[in-house]
Image 1 (tube, rainbow, N blue to C red):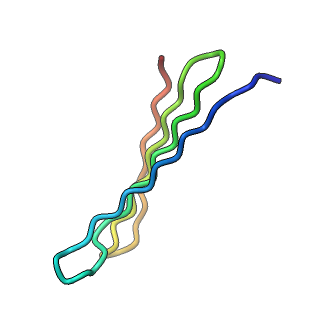
Image 2 (cartoon, rainbow, N blue to C red):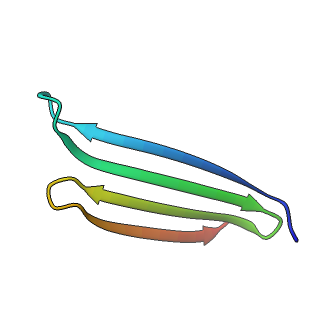
Length: 57
């Protein structure tokens, strides 16, 4: 089993009146084989999540 490090960032966007517009979760997993980036964005208007994965180093 390989050791890996996982870095998770959560970023939320709000309107001036405090209504949440969008939430973005970014997970970066670093290991012996390189880095993997997983981005999941949830649009608060319809709560439809869409994501993007990137494997690279």
